[in-house]
Length: 368
Image 1: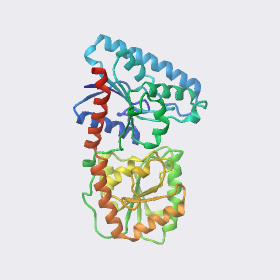
Image 2: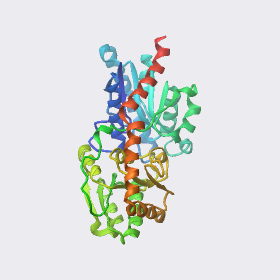
Image 3: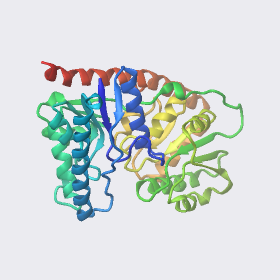
Image 4: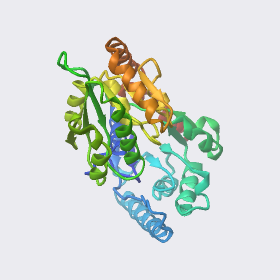
């Protein structure tokens, strides 16, 4: 099936790496795996992050023009017309101004993967985007949810409850694995995260605070990532001095290599939805210590694949990291369980099969 693929927050071929871009790429891979033909229909970014209502209104007008242009294109070249529209990540800061209009005019199913609504934004700075996101969700033939926390607000907007389809976050586990790990030496901690203001920087600060309580133990930390808050992140980890190695931004293959030789993944995950980096770490056979926020608990199983601590508690985070550093056998048990669980529950083929089932379900009524 020819599928029109659109990601209003960030297109899958955007030059700046992020978890959002990675998930969009994974959805494309999953659709191809089950023999669909996804086509990136537009790189239009509807994202507005400052709460600027006039700019949101301008983006809405631009979106309408792009939708009209695409519809004219499909009329002129019907061989390129999608048979289903698939939008990834729709919310008040990045509403979908294309999908509902085009799917409605073409009479094709409209599917959203990872949608969320925040009731407090109904009359807030992103009221325009909030209304658009709600409207898109109401028109969706299915909403694929990667985070169960979104379900409560999405379900009342759907025409029938079955249109909510849960899908566990996933990675291509074949891209990760413990290829080589040097024996002996102090435990090698690692974290992989963008460096930007807000929640990411808050996590870096909490990480620096936590690890500063562990300077009596031998360990090292690799930090993979970069961004506009690089200097602030460096300041946050300054108390750790020479223990930290700054790797900068790395591509997918290089990140997999660094994960493969590490011993423990550490990340406080302040306000993370679920954290793709945590899933990548476990796919690499790494135990994880993280904050128990959002959907992180659906990825990291406490006392099975790692440890979760109360959000924002630096001392509790330090104690959890200390316990894993000191117990090599426990690290090994967590590592094996982490890799095994990703292979069983969070691997690309399983996600592709689930995705195919959702698409079949929404296409049946149209075919009838």
